[in-house]
Image (cartoon, rainbow, N blue to C red):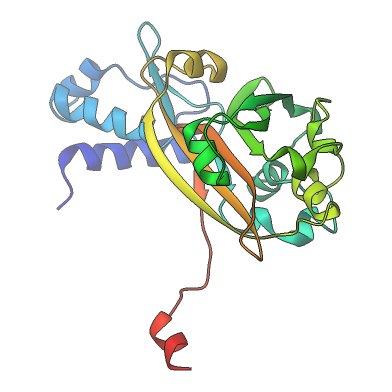
Length: 262
């Protein structure tokens, strides 16, 4: 049997999906649900926190618990990197997410700055460089309309990208097909990548940049991109507003035992 707070959260979620509570509507005050017999103060509070974690509502002092204006974006895990999207077309990763979510987009919803910086310990380790070595940092802030969704900073070895569109600070993707297409044209075709995800509370500067409510969480992404021969051509760190994304992965289940027997 599900705990009482889960039952209440599921009931409210269904009401939100059915339109009983629309975008921008305020849910009942905790005391109102307690008086209505929906559970204790702790039960209602836990249900509201669950709805917030699921991206259905936001809660803040003075405003109560309000239904989000937008459903979370689908952050496509593997299909967003399909070569046909960026090599043969012009669907860079953040646009692939919008298409999969049925949402509109504008290319200038990605802004950026490019600078040559000393590699931090994490960047140096990913690229196999000494700490402090020069790398290019291409920092992007991605918005959906007026709402920021995430930041992504890609780090490159200068010899891989010098003189390419990747180091051009013009807002928007780095030309048709974005950064992966630039690397492809330079002879560095991406072959595989590793993504690591970490959940944590937002730092004050991140909360300000992403317009988060104090105490909101983010998902930090570390992405290492390789060519077929194992050369690292990009190491990226992204910070995503946790409740603004739903992460989706669709992949073939491996069977290493079968592969070894062949």
